[in-house]
Length: 108
Image (cartoon, rainbow, N blue to C red; front, side, top):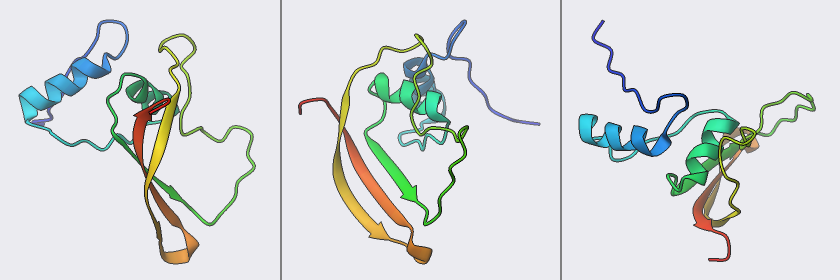
């Protein structure tokens, strides 16, 4: 079917190795990470995300099992505090907000 793939890690995803392979094998310089909370947090913790783009919809859901934007995998990744610097806010159709943040190390 001519579908490209990479293997990055023996027992768990090695985010840095995945990014290295994407760059060297497929010349990917910019990547949108659209994963779940654990994948998002893992890439952030390894310093592999430079920006967070977040759209807040004008809706609410109080479901207890609603997935988190960032989530620790329970010991798979070190938890380092991060700070975010606001880059921009845009109001979108239907009252949605598009927020863009630069990812910074805590205290910077």
